[in-house]
Image (tube, rainbow, N blue to C red; front, side):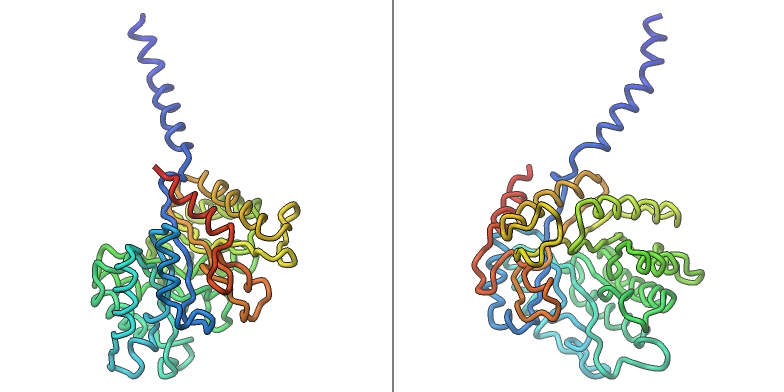
Amino acid sequence: RKEIAVRRLLPVLLFCLGMLAHSRPAQAQLMYGVDVNLHIKTNQGHEGQLLDAARQLGVGWMRLGWGFGWKHVEPQPGQWRWQLSDRVLDALQSHHIHLLCELGAPPDWAYAGESPLDAEGFAVYAGAVAARYRGRIGAYKILNEPQNITAWTPHAYARLVALTARAIHAADPQAIVMAGGFWFTPKASAWQKAAFEDLEFPLGRSIDVFNIHMTRTSLQAAARWLQQAHREMIAEDVQLPIWVDEFAYASQPEEQFMPGLQKGEASQVEFLRQMVRTISRDPDVKAVFWTYLSDNFRARKPEERWLGLLHGDFTPKPAFTAYQVLISSQP
């Protein structure tokens, strides 16, 4: 009887253990990153200072496009220039930081016909980058937020991603490929759904990571968006890890939109802590990137001027220390 009882209880025990494993805090497994706009004028000439700050912060990843854009490495058809990208990648690796390389910045000659740009040419460019830096670049992001650009239909973008991912994986099979970033407002959701359901180039079959943008996103919306991401992947029969490659909150009270979090730099700290806690509850979230490392007081949109962990003079805000503590507290 005892043997029968144990046998009956065993599935229950295994189920409970599985639930405990699935519900364990994922924060200990998170990869932490930061988004850096080295191309903006306020950062030019301070690249070393920003990289030193990133190393002091303790991030393992940096999202960066400057130096790797199409116009940088192939300014004219067939003319390859690698000096800038070589220097940037060498500097990152000397600081022990992995690169999430944002592919984009097409040259003027790359626009052709009715397509937003020459998709085949873009894939050749991406493949050339992946071949040159095989094993040195960890992940690639294909453009940034194409949903916001009228010329990019879901089909055109799904085709671009398919061609580009194929070229990257052929050159570097271990490289991670992701799209330009997902979010779940009605318009963006419809666009993304159409790209995932594309009959010729279903987006979910081309990418390795489902990446979400959560800049200026409330904590409640962040939790909903993660649930929606899972629903969307289930609907399209794909299972992908999730990277939140943008999350941030301004440090200026006039740009702080969340009730109870409108006290300047202290509220930026509290948002950072609560957001990491919120998204790390999902065990499928594997990486988070704060946007940006430093303030950009020249940004076109006021709400984007005060998102940095550093002030405009590159002195740290309290949020810099808070992020540093989160990163260093991992086992």
